Image (cartoon, rainbow, N blue to C red; front, side, top):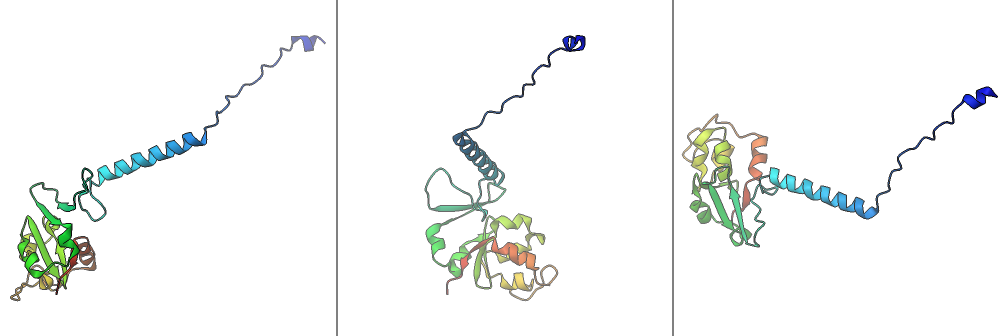
Length: 171
């Protein structure tokens, strides 16, 4: 019996009790996390959408603006111009490094933003305001001079070109 008296009573173990979150708190937390992730994504994209067009969040303006890394180089087109197929005359107006449109196989592209990234250097400027099909497909000027390697652009280059599409050329 002495042994029983010497034994001290065991302390009861206490575990922290987890509080249950209400479904409202879980939903609000999820919404906040999604909103923060969206804001971070928008920030990382530099305020541009999936077509690399600047997103104007301040107004409901009908202007779509394509910007480059250089703020001095901008090309702006009204959505009403883009709703109708661009003509050769319209393309001819976009004939400089800071505003360069070209035609490749009947499709109009605004390649202004790509010019500083072009691996072939400034040879791309020959396409500004003109039909650049031969430059792109064969790497030859309109008068038949070789430009660059003289071989057609790669499938990767063709895929990249699609990112700059304005629309099909009007007849």
